[in-house]
Image 1: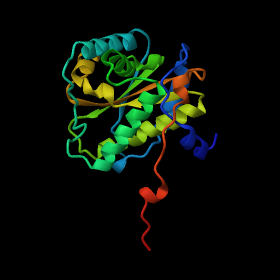
Image 2: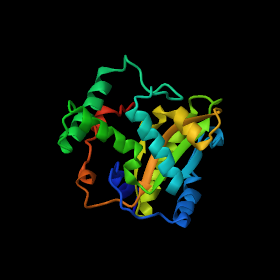
Image 3: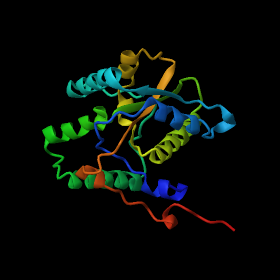
Image 4: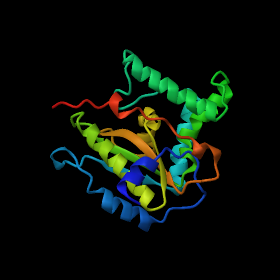
Length: 221
């Protein structure tokens, strides 16, 4: 697989096979991913690899938090109310696309909650990655974490694996820290569900549109 093929074929996978990923494969993946760039080579990322009982324990805690209405509490500013309208429009279009694809009525509270809970069940992936960083760092290191996340997701394809990045679980950072005994000096940035894709699952046929080059690139001579 070429880099071009990896970039263009990567997508958020929301259904995985009930098949474990060998630790040896994961180690090989991270042994390559560690070459991801970062500002001043600070390499601020810390990655927790959750499988088996630990993954289930965290998933159960997060699902219970959502069901019981626990207030969301990120370690960082997740969004702002006065974001540009075109960004709001893209978010709305994304949600509408997913709802229509799943034939889900967002007014159906039961169905909507079940849809949301899939994130916290990690889409039944055999592996859940948590990406952390130290709290006492500049916001520029979020860029480094994003670079590492993309590196992991592209490399996963090389090993026949699929991924789904999620910032939604970071909304319950205190619960994650309590469940996994993570010190409060760390920030929970995001999660990545990882495993072998269920290619027969209808939801995995879902794709998203991308804006044209002209909509985000400006050339200066």
